[in-house]
Amino acid sequence: MVRCLINVLSVVVVVTLSLALAVPALAAPTKLSQQGRLVDDNGVPLEGAHQLTFRLYDDSSDGALLWTESRNLDLTDGFYSTVLGDQSPLDDQLFGGSVWMELSVGDMVLSPRHQVVSVPTALRAAVAEHVDGGVVDAAEVWVGGQLVIDDSGAWVGGSGANSWDDLSDVPVDLQDGDSDTLGNLSCFDGGVPSWSAAAGQWLCSVDADSLGNMSCADGQVAKFSAATGSWVCNPDTDTLGAMFCFDGGIPSWNASLNQWTCAADQDTDSDTLATLNCANGGVPV
Image (cartoon, rainbow, N blue to C red; front, side, top):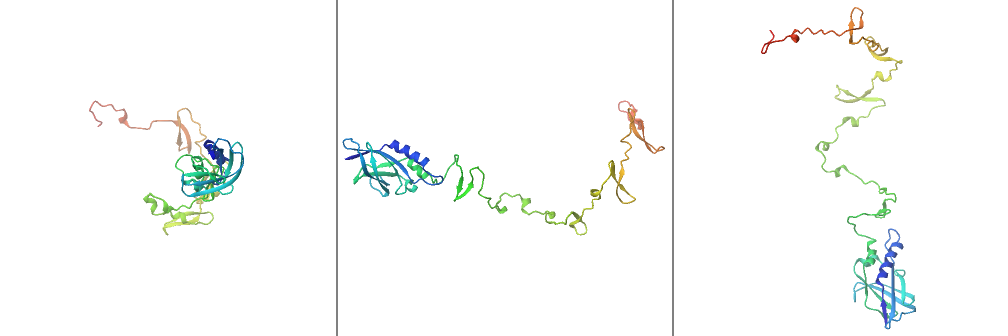
């Protein structure tokens, strides 16, 4: 009689490595590494070529057959190692629940079945149905077969359609629409909005800013000429700007000279009450 010694720790380790190294990005794994050792009733390891058949069931003794694959393997000191799924692809849906593996050597079915635990369930995680919290560390993010975040972390999924009707808590003063009448006013080149009292609305008119096109000589300033009814260029005749006064002096207009001159600051306030002293309770009369 042949006995099967399955190194569960080795199975777990090898499965973990196969998932990490043999699975392409965004693809569910379809292969599973498995190792074990076969000995007879006397503990003598089997040697040479043997046909091994692996079966997966949904129960430890009876149940439905989920998957099967046969391999011709060379045993050394009873040890074997193989990759399941080369001939019959493994569907990740198989690992949605509890699964047991049954091994046959030739026509001999070994028992009991061994439950596939922990790490193979990671096959199901390759197509995770939902993620709650935590951090997602991925090179790219795809949704429905479309790349939405590239390997630089930039959003490339396009812009979603937004509608103002989807907004909530809109202030009342914005719900009546925009009453800016200038927003729909189209003017000709160089035209400016001008309010027409006769029409009671904004109209387009010519920009009559005469100073905008005015060019004066260095040092000249714009002055309005009542004679011509327009702005003209004239020298800056600000005589106070170049006026120098003595200490405490102030500009004073001299009518006889018809010009500004410096004069002493004289208090012209003739308010006699300012120097009036009354007794307690007294009033000016």
